[in-house]
Image (tube, rainbow, N blue to C red; front, side, top):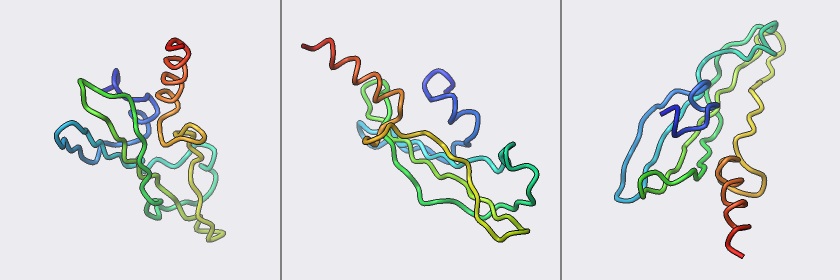
Length: 112
């Protein structure tokens, strides 16, 4: 999986499940319950997940790939504030991973 998926997903997310429907592969990820280092000085408890985000990634062996990502949130017990990591998973203006969007952009330049 390390060869096929973005390193960020492998490091900070667990694969919750996978589904194969004909020519589509769905991979479901949940952020690990590891408190972000930048927030380690605060008293945080796990407080569920944000709404799931679906991102199209590189096709694999002729199958379209969709990454379903659930980001975790924590509750600061002192302030009552909900906090989360600020992930940069989606290329701006797309529903694809940054790497896949960059690949398509480069590919488009060669088809002139």
